[in-house]
Image: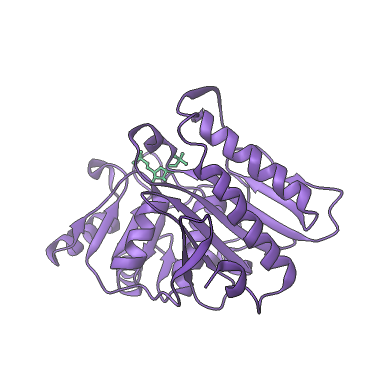
Length: 295
Ligand code: AFP
C-alpha cells in the first residue's frame, strides 16, 4: 500500500502536509553526493552547518511556504519562528532538516524529523497532531503517526513510499544508547546506567539521534542524552528532536522523559531550548524517574 492510500482517512490538510514532506524527502535523498562540504555558516547553537544541512533546510522551508497550509515554522537551523503570512491554513511545523549531520561525511544514517501542531509551535509536545521522520540509510524510510498508530514506509525502486510495517509497537529489547561522557554523569543517571549494564544491555550509539531511536523503536531499549556536570540541560533540542521523536515512541507504546517528568508535558520557553532526554521502553523510563526521585 502506498503512503497516499494509507493516509486516506486523515484530515485533508494533515494528509497533504505528510505527503509534501515525503516528496521533499525524496529530493533530499538524492542530494547527498554533491553536498558533502562544510558551509561557512554556523547555526544558533554555534555548530558549523554542512552544505547539505542548509540546503535541506531551504528546500523544506520553500516547499512549506508554498503549501499555503502552514502558518508557523520553527527549524533547528533558524534562529526564530517563521510566519508565512500568505497562508490560508493554520498548521505549525517544527523540524530538524538533517539530524545527525556530523555523520554525513562517513556515510552513516541521518534523518529529517518533523512535528506538526494546529497553531502555535511553542507548545507542549503532547499538543502535536502528527509527527514523522525520514531516515536516509541504505534504504530511505518514512515513519509517521497521526495519533492512529505508528507506520513505516520504504522508498521503492519506482520512487514511491510503500508500506513496510503497520502499527509498530516498541519491542522489549536490551539496547542502550547513552550520550555524553561517563565522567560527567549525574548521580541518578549513573545509577541507572549501572543498573542497565547489570541487566546486560548492549551499547549502540551512532551519533545520529534519529537513527538510534529508530533502532530502539524496532529492537527495544532506551536512548538517552542526559543532563551532565556543566551542562545540566543536556544537548538535544526539545522542539526539534525530543518532542517529535518522543511523540512517535509514546504512540508506539513507549515513553519519554527528562529524567523526572514526561517530556511531552513540558511548556517550551524558547525555540532553542535544550533538554535532558530519555526515550524508549516504559520500563527503562520509569526506572530513571524513580532513581532520580531518590537522589
Ligand atoms: P545534528 O547533527 O543535527 O547537529 O545533531 C546531532 C545530535 O544532536 C544527535 O543527533 C546526536 O545524538 C547527538 O547530537 C550526538 O552528540 P555527541 O556528538 O555529543 O555524541
